[in-house]
Length: 506
Ligand code: SF4
Image 1: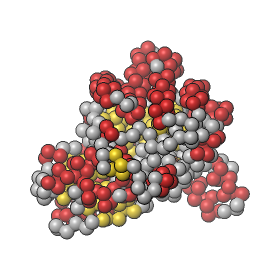
Image 2: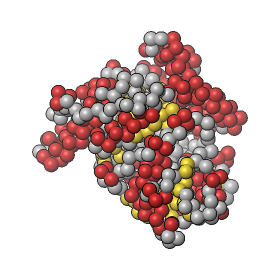
Image 3: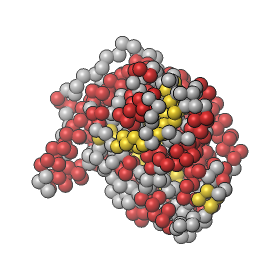
Image 4: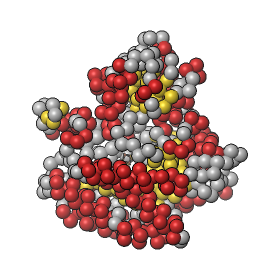
């Protein structure tokens, strides 16, 4: 019995940007007796094989197509991932699933495989939310080095916040489950030995304990909570002190809440650790917009600009993420947002439109609002929007109090065009000394813009396919830019020197 792990995608640029981590984790979680899993190629599926397909909402439809093909070829089909966790029956009805793994697959996967080998797969395996000590390290020895620009390593799962548009806190939980620095650093060293210089720390929130949390626990004299928070925080510093000992050509990128800017000791440690960039969910530049998404721990106006600039001052570049289509948005919000992004000196930005994602508070509200008989498109209820063929899907899903969907879409497109105009990018690249470096920055900015703007919000399919062509070509020089010389003898950095240990922020 061969094991196949398939990451469905209808958009392929030849070179993918980031390694799909789950495939290499499940490869590691596959018992030795099955051999090494085969990846990415539905053509090689034989009767009696087992096929694991990981889906999120955006690639569920493609995943179901592959699942059906695999089942027709006589294989056992096992679905997993956030979307299958939320809609297990859908994977059975539409994707030919024999089994669905709900929640974390690190442990449940092996059980599902054993049952398939015995010919008795169960309909559902409950993976749940396992402890960080049970997270499985990825099998990086299986990764085809020249297919990916970035590798990905997870250091913490879960996020204590509760943003209305985000499913992370509901699916991964609000309790940060943090891996020890030993296991994280081992994976990263293995990647650098192979020649990966760029590593995404694929965390829900790299800053799981804020100064506010610590102050609150102190004020409440909650010593148990305080020592728990301090332990998590100290472990973060320990990890960063070990990352800091890695070769200088390494670059890490992560996701973080903007509260990290209140903690400049943390930002300085990030910089020393080669964590050169972070995605920060800014979402909205007004207090009303932040309230719309339950994110009032973010700042607005001038305070927001100051906070984002703090990242930059401490050597951490920001990829600012903004949402349009919030109920409080007005036509002037679009220009105000791009102006704020520019004044805040964010290095990259993404501008997305509000979409209801399954597993979120927004989705529940939206689904309820459409009632028992939601509108149908191609025979599919709008509330199952991911099943509607891509070319028929609406670009926006919410009625807005003052703007039409088309107005929001075209204004969002204009914001992308403005932020990523050649002049804007060139100005932003001025922090880079060499001309070659500045040109590389322009190239990467253009790739980013093409991949995420046109494929997401363009109405015209010619524009979408032009975008893909563009990225395919641009990705070739980029891949070389990202690759590093393998360092097979690289040693594992040791524990933090005491002088680097974290303060508690008290
Ligand atoms: S959007 Fe970010 S901060 Fe909010 S719940 Fe999700 S991961 Fe946490």
